[in-house]
Image 1 (cartoon, one colour):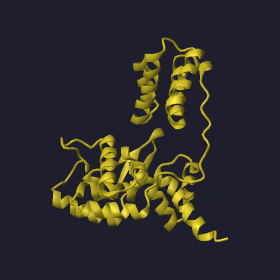
Image 2 (image 1 turned 90 degrees about the horizontal axis):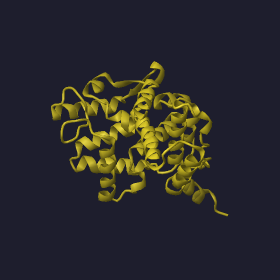
Image 3 (image 1 turned 45 degrees about the vertical axis):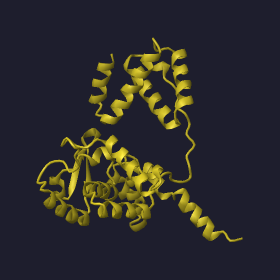
Image 4 (image 1 turned 60 degrees about the vertical axis):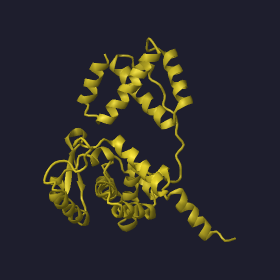
Length: 267
């Protein structure tokens, strides 16, 4: 049944990460409970609430609800948790730390990782998209991705980054193929990127909470709006289906809010 569910998710053109997360939730439930009934589903939900953050719990609930529809039991669907929205952005690398990290990578001769960070911060790519960049895309100046519904999302590579990356390609003798490879010559995995970022955080005293791939996507969005305040264009560039998702970047980080409060409130 799970195999058929996987095929259905692929037909719906869900991302590989989403499919993996959905299948994990269904298989995890199956290991703990023998059947899908109201009692077992509520027990599983309670167990998840005790162990994980609301966002993770809701992902598992979403997965189970989709599976319940698939097996013809839609009436058993679970309610998602209400998540209180914060009035500030969390865990976004500061511009100062972003510049510091790039400078350290360059001075330490970590050229591959320097460009990996540059591509994250200057294109707004998700980590799953980042690993798809090839030398050919640098020459073209963009990467086209095909999304749900046959739509095409274009990730632009800024001219300055293209010029700098072309020099890197010449030095490394890379004429074609993926830019970011592991030691076996295969496209590097997102998990390996996350682990390396944590190592850099420890090595150079950067807050580990902001050293994750998505943090640089946040940085891209924040920097873009500070220079060119067009949220509709930013939504398109980031591949958001709804502009409401993009509005979060109009908020300031907690540290930015603190700095403003310290400066403004003198009474």
